[in-house]
Amino acid sequence: MRHPIMISLCVAGAFALTACEQSTGNNVDRAFQDINVVDETNLNDVMLTAADPNEAVAYFQRAVGEKPERIDLLRGLGHSLVRAKRNTEAVTVWSTVADHKDATNDDRVDLADALIRNNEWDRADEVLDTIPPTYETFKRYRLEAMIADSDQEWKKADSFYEIAVGLTTQPANVMNNWGYSKLTRGDYPGAERLFSDAVRQDPKLFTAKNNLILARGAQQKYSLPVLPVNQIERAQLLYTLGLSAIKQGDTAIGKGLLRDAIETHPQHFEDAARSLSTLEANVSS
Image 1 (tube, helix red, strand yellow):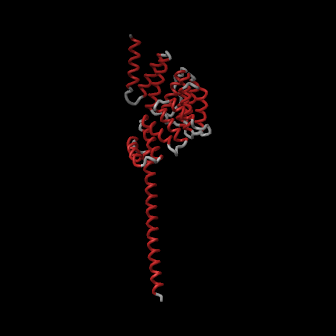
Image 2 (cartoon, rainbow, N blue to C red):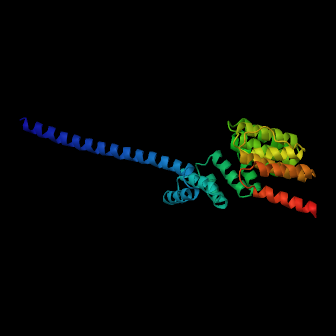
């Protein structure tokens, strides 16, 4: 009488074992899927930061070709095209991203950025206008400031630059941009202050150092301020200051600064030597 019971138990055990094997197999499949997702995410991050920009473009183009619905891959392609300075293509991709059902305000800001890089300022302005004013990020206000600059709307530009500076822990580049805006308007003291602030925030930012010298030269301040510079940078700044003095009509001072630049440079300073030679030849004739 116990035999049917034993058979039933065995059958039940077999079904349970099969179910267990299926469950284990499913868990393993899911685990491998999770690993693949992690690996892909890591690879995407590497391609966006460390890889050669054009290699990254090729990688994301393949990925988007296989999974065109994936907005994260489209974003990766857009960022890679910007890094590769392929701005026309970047605009096309970011336009696609901005039209995606899962698009965010960040995506629209990135589209505006690509449009500015492609010299499509009006379109960039239109895109930024679609973003609610309550959406406040450093990148959004940096772009707003650049557009206001291009339209010579100086009060708006100053306001946007000020907001952008307050929204980042690394304001050196935006301070440099703001200073250059002041320089183009002829506000040389304001430009000098902002370039000095930019250098203080990032002592390696040579563009801000050179712009600082331009602002000082425009005010006929022909001495180098105290700056963290190496010998080559110092020679370059003396050269910039010499050219500024010559532009102001202070030729003798300019010649002296060019000679200082040539003597300071650790190698032959071709540009400064040529400028000085041309200047002396013009004076002689």
